[in-house]
Amino acid sequence: MDISLVIPLLNEAESLPELSAWIEKVMKEHNYSYEVIFVDDGSTDTSWNVIEELRRKNPNIKGIKFQRNYGKSAALNEAFRAAQGDVVITMDADLQDSPDEIPELRKMIVQDGYDLVSGWKKKRYDNTLTKNIPSKFFNAVTRKVSGIKLHDFNCGLKAYRNKVVKSIEVYGEMHRYIPVLAKWAGFKKITEKPVEHRARKYGVSKFGLRRFVNGFLDLISITFVSKFSKRPMHFFGLWGSIFFLVGLGISSYLIISKLLSPLTFALTNRPDFYLALTTLIVGMQLFLAGFIGELVSRNSATRNSYLIEEKTGL
Ligand code: UDP
Ligand code: MG
Figure 1 (cartoon, rainbow, N blue to C red):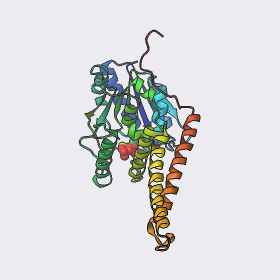
Figure 2 (cartoon, rainbow, N blue to C red):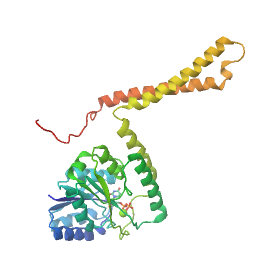
Figure 3 (cartoon, rainbow, N blue to C red):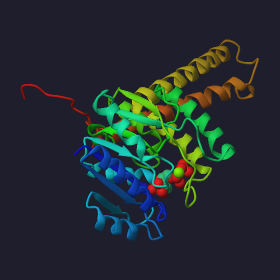
Figure 4 (tube, rainbow, N blue to C red):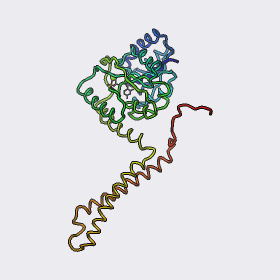
């Protein structure tokens, strides 16, 4: 199969018929063998009925319906497990992404050999203040932290080599960081392509301003998890030891000066006494956190989750 098109949706009933007609047109023109996987993320409108209706007319259309709203990441993850196409393309359901981009995206994976091609909404049709400005900041931070040179991490339109989507797990709200997850899974050929973006025709946006707060916290946690979850002692142990040694240094200094001239000062009147106390305690706490972290990761089912690229002679 050439292409799996993955479309997560929440209450987008009005857009679906137009979207799927457009997709069918593009797929027919290029003679692709394909599937469209709609994931209904707990819609409360008639979206699921529309999907079933569309499937009756076109057997390439497939659907997954969640029991309730689990979020875009869960929807993508579930469809990624099911996707059979050599190239997997994700797209929003609200007609803001254009299916006309599909052939070029596929070409960049199949011919140019990229693992992941991310869409870049160079010219955006969203509300400037609430979206475009925070998203510039968000992208700049993500670029810095991840070292991936993309302008628009959160674009819904992306193309992947099949192996990439089978190698990553998208959970929580990590759909904003799929390129980062892919890079950490070992896929290096990541690039972007400017894509056409359109104003929302039907319905309303499903994400509020909270996206930026959550998005930022998620970035911190994936950075940390990817770096240290398999070796927590390297982080906590290091900082714990540094704190502890500093505390030890200050207390030795205090003890020695007290022994040399016992009557000149009372220990508890000195600020460095409290500094010594806190650094010792904080250091010990950090060290213990690292040790407990090691025990947890030692027992984790994924402690040895690595990906094998190829084998020979086995
Ligand atoms: N979406 C989803 N589950 C959610 C929120 C959104 O499947 O909990 C879908 C939504 O239906 C759309 C896509 O994710 O197809 C992008 O959402 P939206 O257009 O609201 O985001 P925006 O374009 O405003 O960033
Ligand atoms: Mg949208």
